[in-house]
Image (cartoon, rainbow, N blue to C red):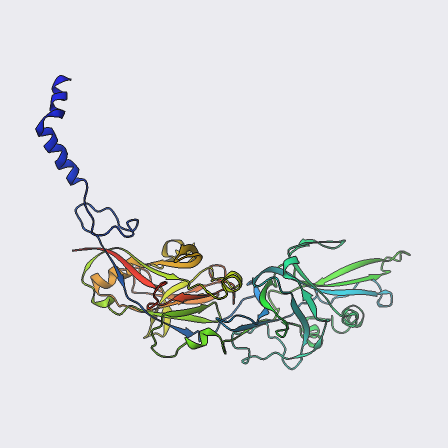
Length: 494
């Protein structure tokens, strides 16, 4: 013990201690963002920001929704950044089977009422203003075709006309839609209930029977072409409602009573017509108008690097991203490459705009193949398996952070390290990138190197993307002073 004590106090020990301390305290090139810089013994790591050229374009691809998707009804009339939006929904509801008949004799049927019920799945926008919903009957001149996938953003391709109102205009208070509905026939929540006119109820309960309209499916569709729902944009509407046709909450409820049992006491009953997933026609049309809005000064058709860029969920806009000096980078080890995009808050209408019209929950970063004229996955980084895309690792989900004096700024991060490594090491192609807010979308997917010789189409759905027309965000472009979109590289020289 005495010998050990003397060693600690000796000059030789002090020299050894200083040597070990110096060897274990390596000074790195930068302290900025140290959480991204990996610990690599004996290797100096560097940090740099690459400049980006960014601009905004209108989406030209046809957007579609499918019968299992949530669909939009509504109107946004006051968004100074992105303009106006209107959404209408056209659909068919049919009896549970054919031939169909109400119980009892036709003479005994007494009409009570008819209610169009929609399964409410949420909203986008300002819920404080009620929506004035109208229900029209689709014209025989423009019937729905169940075998046509209607383009959401091009209603002029398949125009749908109407011939008259089926209900008085109904005021829908969004704040009450989650309330419970409890009566003899319902114990439910999240319903939009629209009473139809009495003559419409009489038509479905008394006028139609198994000898005419209810004989079979095709005959019924010849008598009644379906419902068309719109929201009056002349009122101060500023929200979109989302409904689902396949949910059991969506139905036409026909209330009646009859002496079918011969009893002296008559009682009200109900029959439901629902959406047929196999043969039901529908069309969800969404129209954007950016006239006079801020975005109209930034959307381009040519090369126009911009400090502000705009993304509107399908059908909407996308941002083109170019990295001018990427192909000329010398060979190096890329520890991390991260592209960051941040929202530019609206100073004038922060409470009304950024709170109501939130940023999309997901943005998709893709590469654009100018030869095949199609989007493709970011090589080696955006991967797809039987469990779906690797969005958690790759990035794209909306996060919020405090920045530049703002407490809640939407931000999106994408990790593209392997893509950049392929460019600097193998001289892979440096693509023009695209950033958008997809609903249903497609990518030409190529597996990672060295299995990148084959590709196939991968289809994204709204479940991994966004509901149609849900979300918009103004982002800082590559030239913005405070919220600059940027590509950060953490690397080591070889």
